[in-house]
Length: 248
Image 1 (cartoon, rainbow, N blue to C red):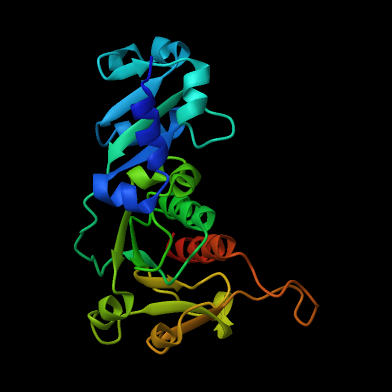
Image 2: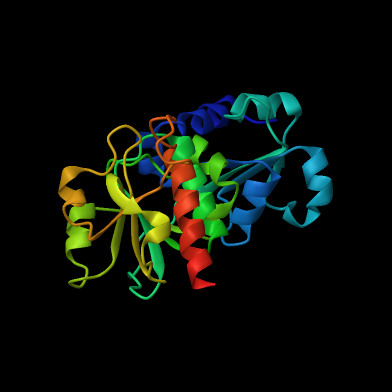
């Protein structure tokens, strides 16, 4: 039986302040927990008999819980057999100028951040640099939206203008802007930094001034009335797909 104190602690990890103090985060479901367990061991593991019967090798780590108990600790509307508490990642990594990386400037929606991490994983982009006001990587909604991709993509929070300013002169800095040039008619390098902006305001003026390759995803057909903009995660997927198509 899981104690009331343990339930209260797990539920408190919904708060960024608590996650930061404890340096842990919650992951749920066989896919997300399984992918994370390939790269690190959980601090705590709670699972139903059904999950444990398939993953008996984790019996020593696991506390068996009932479906009712899992509901009490889960952040999901429909809990998925297993919940784990993991230590937070070491978010420091050396920048590799010879690869393609992403930078996120002020993204607020946890679902967008999680989806972009998943997109980066799909397209082999291993590093994402986030402004400090971007949504928290360890928010349960972000963790769930990554579907395990956070185990393979390094996400680092930094002073984004300072980071970009430290890059070599002329380094390719791609940004999506409404006054940018047609993505499909521009030369794209196999390396560089793709900068995606806030859902409502786009890339901040300070960072926009540093962009040396301004891109626009054109609507179709030209001149037709369409939606005002694309969701930032969808835009990221389109851009990453075009970069990878050119380098294949």
